[in-house]
Image (spheres, rainbow, N blue to C red):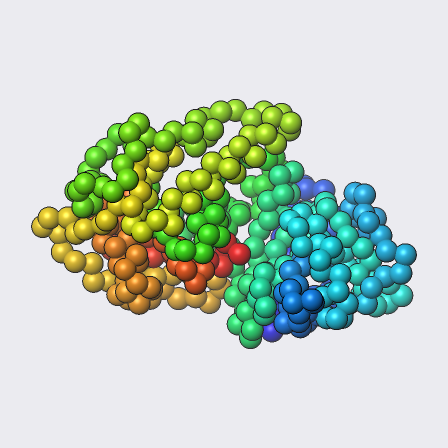
Length: 373
């Protein structure tokens, strides 16, 4: 079910890139080969090797298309048992198993650390959970999610979701593209909210992050006073880092490392019961805040719910259908404070962005956990 749709995505992007003058010579496996890789990875994900779940990433390309490949003298068969055996060697981030044809059969030829733009990459995220992605083309390792396969569920990411009315900028960044033609191969700016979302989801305790306008205290009308953990002065290290310049590669590497540490620190406080509040320029104001309905405001009864996948239709639902107290509180906060955005991580891995939609005249809940895998 997945392979023909995934192949069409890669073929379309390769053609578009070439039409816009990009030098792209990435080899494209055919649908049957994609199917074989998906099938082997799926069954490998259900195995155990010395008690561990295999977590591997497979990049389908010949060894001569990457820099400094680590090549096996004898290629490894592309079968679940063999993938589970070699998985411990490639569990760390940035290392992939290389897959290509050998004597007419797909096999694992070794490992690699650099992946050309638009190469077909398949990651085992959890038992029965696979993510198809490709390299965006910048030098900082950014990947674009193409599809998420979970059991017999196939979710193809909808590239057009970022062009919908009222689409939050964070969703555009998570999708990884405005259009293929807009990519210029440069590192570009880092969307720190994406990193915060990933880090919030990673700690597994659930969390609620409120992004409020700078220089405004209107949001306090929707918060129970006093706030348990108010910061005086605001914690501004993340804001300072985002104002710094990272012009050369060496400087960018140090900046990225510092940014990652601070992002994890800020995301960590979202694990505390209550909401974490930051400004839109990333100053941390408080955490452990309790949301309340603003005086005179009606309770939130309906939200529009969408997920950026092909074939996904918008639905109108009560916010409690999305989760528990965090989701209801976030929806109420956004209905009362329409210039804010709320990010809710569930303990089960779901992630929802709540924002006010002027077009729909109601709160819009964007389900984005597919993009955070």
